Image 1 (cartoon, rainbow, N blue to C red):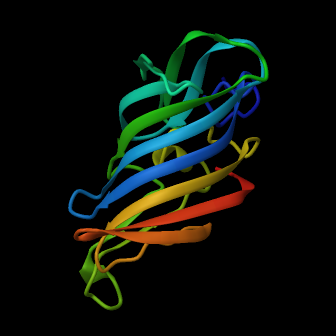
Image 2 (tube, rainbow, N blue to C red):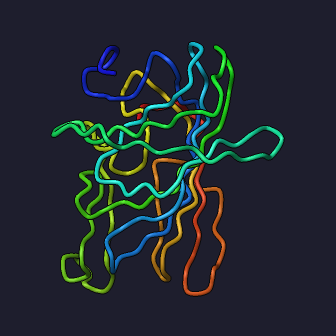
Length: 199
């Protein structure tokens, strides 16, 4: 950690992220996002662990998803805390993975109001004063408070997302909209960004 990027606790020399998928629900009353982050990873060396950057995230569970549909629960270690760079999320794999092996990890989590990437505004704080508003800003090292990730410009990923918001609100992202579906009092908006970008 800190060997490739002094601002990241991720084990950047061991694994790299290829794609991230976020499946999140917006809760304006609690000022949180809740759901999962699915990370498609590739081993750069033979390794038995994945270390990700987080900040002010409540991580509930993590699992390793097999190509055959199997799932293995991973132990969560968040004991390494840095005043500036947040909390390292250490996930130990059931068995070591060899170099160039691709694998997928799903992390269930919830953001907290302390996260630097997320800003909730009450309806009174908006121009129209009718609906609440949410925006995110991940620079410089705040993506780790939006989802567990390798929060370093040395890692460029594609991403997709499904964002559930209460009606009549709309979700927008720096990605191509791929549609929306009604879900009772909510709408789920889908996005895809095929161009690889830093977190």
